[in-house]
Length: 398
Image (cartoon, rainbow, N blue to C red; front, side, top):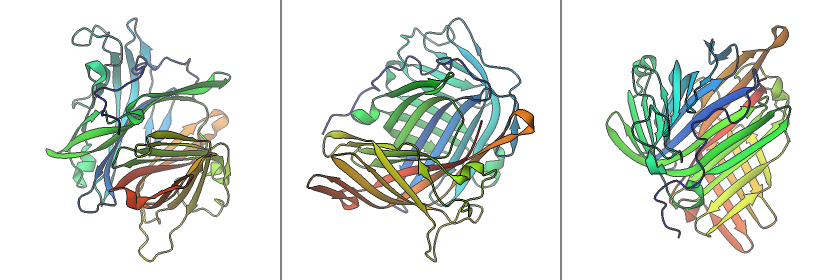
């Protein structure tokens, strides 16, 4: 096996900049997103999960899960590359039994600065160290330490969430794991009238998480995203394996659910999904190679078991059957959602129209996985644990 990395590899020079692409009104959307997964000792097939999002959008107004966010001012960038932006910090926490959502949904102004900025304590190199710092009474920051050795995350839950039993404080440290999953993946594409995307990702890290003083160890996933295009329906999911392997899938698609205007699942109109493109990747630590898949198929089904799990609203949680493949290898996966976090976006557009997007995040339980490459076949029995999360979004936000 490859040795553990001592720092995160890659070009992080744009990590704290949101001006990589010229903004487009109502379409530009920026966020830093972290997902933390901690094996649940009480239920080894599941994981406790924390998601935190620091985000802003170029829009006059958008309703986020019932909260109207009206930024008023646009993002400002100073001569040193520091940003001041209106935005929101949002989070959810799944404790292995209960989904606390929203754990945080807080409107605030934020400062994003690289370590070369005069406000940064000490002299920086411009290679990735920096932070996004919400201007709030509590420390709600995300940052990278000098030398790109680790990320820190600090979070204090909202009073409303605490009144329903959620923990108060979360502190996390993300550190490199090994090879490709802990090396920066960068994608940039501009395809029409300035629309496109710019994405930085770390697919798998080690993580230390402290929740109300209780220490836990798990894994993490990080991405910083710029999207400048309408948001169409998609499936996405990822898996972390105990040996450090990483697998994901992505399938944007056309579906009658693009006309949905609320968060209700299992609609009669949801009868087909025509894939647009489908991709995936498997960083296989046991095999010592990376498999890039150029085909992806995702099938969604409603479990019929009497003990089928339900979300906080009483809706039956879905099962996903996923297949990713290329000319040499394939992975066939069956997972079921054990909980659901949802974010509901409604954005006024022109002529009094309101566009809608429901974005669902599902902590997963892996029921089966088969990886095949030539005569080699591996299954769930070849791993001590596999934990992950899946997304399903419907509607069109524009």
